[in-house]
Image (cartoon, rainbow over all chains, first blue to last red):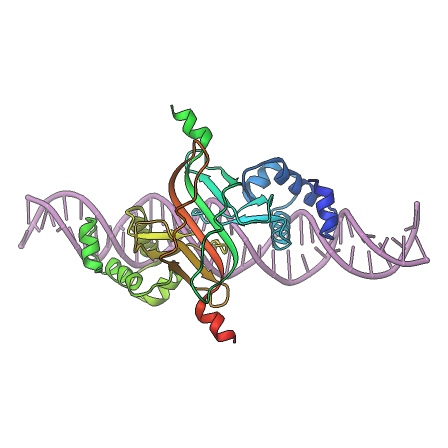
Length: 133
Length: 133
DNA sequence: ATATTTTTGCAACACTGTCGCAAATATCAT
DNA sequence: ATGATATTTGCGACAGTGTTGCAAAAATAT
């Protein structure tokens, strides 16, 4: 995956800020908040630009917006189009995608129509649980 | 379930505001935000009191805090201690508990420890999908 | 009934996310 | 490449959410 290709695929102007934001998101496998992106992109682009970019990338389906209990939104590149689970570690605070385990057997009651899922498991991640011992 | 009993069970002072907040939460089966509670409790208690009460009820496990994509926290009384799924309707905006369907087969990878889950499905609820036709 | 502890209301605050608008930048056509 | 057009940016301002310190008020304990 490549930032410039994504922008052209989705017919978005190739601006410096957008390229850098996408590169940051492509570089990591944990979800980032606008805040975290801002510190990584110090001086490169404005808060408003980051928010606007995250919003358009989300609406185009390039990234996924994850709601957290701290009510700060975090964003990750979508790797698979399937529903998948996110894992938040209470120790290091990171949010990761758990690929592989898919809650596809969830059956909604009659009359309910699914559009999207937002599955978050909170606990201790592998790295942190190893460090404890 | 009874507001006054809950407060005494959890050794929380029985104040007017807390009783009213709990009664509102017990009365409904959809998740409420602080905002929504405030309008229902017009003049009965302060914003700060509602936030503080919701926080302590959440930490005691009486209610569940649901993170939404709009980054406004919503709260519901916990009916079952099990993991369960919440459903947010994009039409009427309500968030309900879907009891009965439990994603218990979700298997975390080696080394991950589960503490809590936050499963949200976004779509159209039964009532709204019936009204469309 | 009084002393002690807890909670409340208020005001102030930090932070997240949004928006209008003029300036800057990117894209398009030539 | 050059200029015309369209899009995006940065800035400042703003609304809303959630938190906190502190004195007053209310609840609990004695």
